[in-house]
Length: 322
Image (cartoon, rainbow, N blue to C red):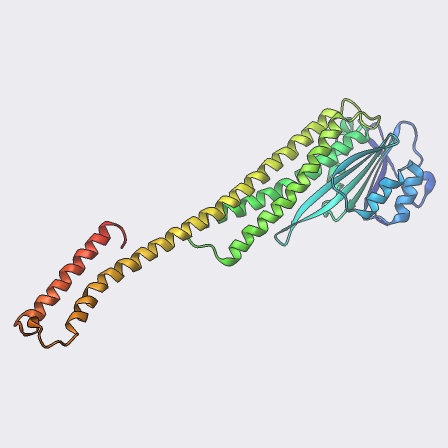
């Protein structure tokens, strides 16, 4: 069975467990509502819930396929919400989905690919019966807030890695694996941003959506979810800009280092050109070269070479070419 937890609540207090194998147990009193959580369910399990709670076939089809963007749809007075979950696995952001059916007396969650169960969230809400007494719409807010809070550790982890890259860029050349990692992070953040956009739209719609499933007193809670998504989105945009600047600064520093090396090579080539030119002149072996017979000509030439080379060295040193 893919049912993780299924309970009936009355006035915010858990009163009994529910079972898909026992149809009569799914019957609810007027003052009760059901919270059923499933993980990657089979078609017949959703069919049973669909028959009991009147779930729309299109919503059931979407929940089974699990390849949806975040959205909020209303089917005959019932609300169907899709939220994208995210987590880091092997230095990559992997995504899952949480599908939520919200009706007058039920909230059904269907998770796909998400390792974060709602067990702790359920215990937290059950510890506050006054809030849980609001019903399924408050649970919907809590689940969406739980999903968005899962984005924060991802951004924190990437942010630390990006800051480490930024510090390293100022000290040494970026290696090929580091450059490839920068491009990988940029792709990951672009994909993440494509998820955050629909999440913003979905949270904004829930804030203003007029449906019997959502009490007007609960709508402001969805504004809090929207604010959280926007903060994460702003941080992701900031990280993308930092990654771009890291790559640009790395390129500029590399050009600067290459320019410094080129200047040093040019300076030493100019210094070495002096003795090379003089030695070349005296190596032509012409008979009529008066300097060849000078008594101190050899020492004078060496002294001239040393003076010129030292002068060039001092000049280049003053110009910071050496």
